[in-house]
Length: 283
Ligand SMILES: Cc1ncc(C[n+]2csc(CCOP(=O)(O)OP(=O)(O)O)c2C)c(N)n1
Ligand SMILES: [Mg+2]
Image (cartoon, rainbow, N blue to C red; front, side, top):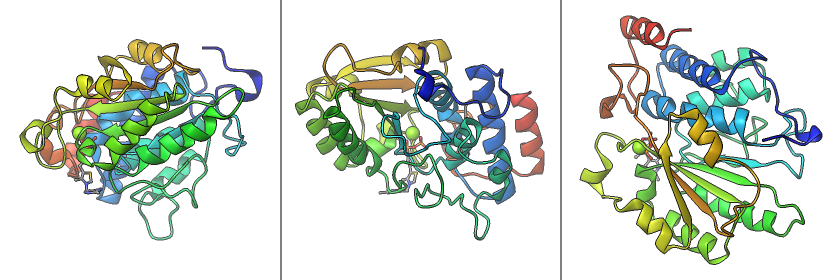
């Protein structure tokens, strides 16, 4: 994509970094934050890192020096428990100093366990209670649809999160209103807190559900940056409908002992595990 000059891609951290390098940085930084805070949700941080890096460095139009710019694209982190990755992406995008990440969940820090828009620029709405962010994002997309040049609204939900009924009211409304400026991404890592989604309240056939609600659907590898860049392109969808991207991911992606393990939903690595995780994630 080629951003308009007033919405040029921001540069956070290493100016020349690729999306893949930024995703890896988000992974390393979020593991460090969880290790230092002794709290957090590393499994879902790691599954969403490539999606977040692509959104902030390969898709969205925004200006971190003007977070309230009316024409900016919006991002809602509906799976609000994954703040290690979300805050890392926001800091890399230039919304606040990278050094502030080391205050994660410390007393008086602006970096709470769940995102609070009163504290940090770049957060469009508070999230944490699952099933909250997506309905708010639908409201934003409705507002945007009245603009002559509608801004795009992106929202990232967890797959377990989709068990909340509020999502399906929002899905119905978005389909009915044909919100072509709305892209929902499902972080389809197949795990929720402590168990597989399909063993808890099954979601399949997930793509068919979205189609039945009036959405178009793209299924992709949520760790393939090129594929993500293609499906997350900003601008109105040609279909004239909202788009659901089912991003197939691995919870704990990149750290061997965390991959596919429900126990790492909110596990905290000890020193040895932390050092191994950073070694595996490399530079
Ligand atoms: C309404 C609500 N119920 C319960 C929780 C506690 N909780 C936090 S994360 C989580 C599991 C979420 O699973 P998923 O959406 O699949 O997220 P991911 O796998 O991406 O971490 C639960 C139950 C919550 N935050 N909100
Ligand atoms: Mg999940």
